Length: 143
Image (cartoon, rainbow, N blue to C red; front, side, top):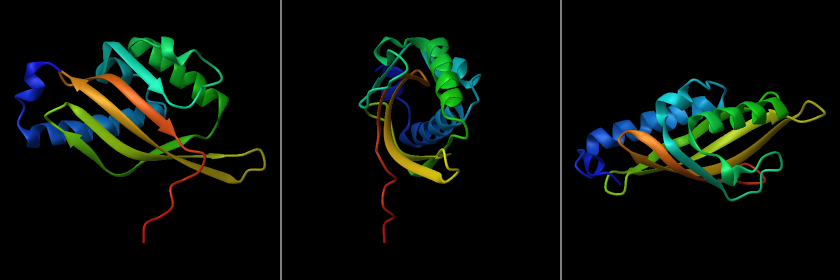
């Protein structure tokens, strides 16, 4: 972590963290131009689930990520990602974690829903690394 993140007031980092996760979600919803603004040049992503269409461990930087997201969206038309709750932001470590859902139509036209959790590492206001897990179904509703 860079020292400026550790010296950022918690309230400021909370706001930055929520905003970054909202932009991260918008990127996955197809706003690919966000990659250059929110992702650091040395960015890496680690998916816990195997991605069949790409060597995701080799993705580096905003351009690789934007190409991957575009190909992913093309392979599964109708994807829509949304946040589930408010991201948890840790100003000390510079990490942001949040649950999310994705919906898309299956071959019959029925809506399929899955959930996941992403943890973003942030340095100097940009995402440097992400750890992502996608479930096989949507999280059950609380209550």
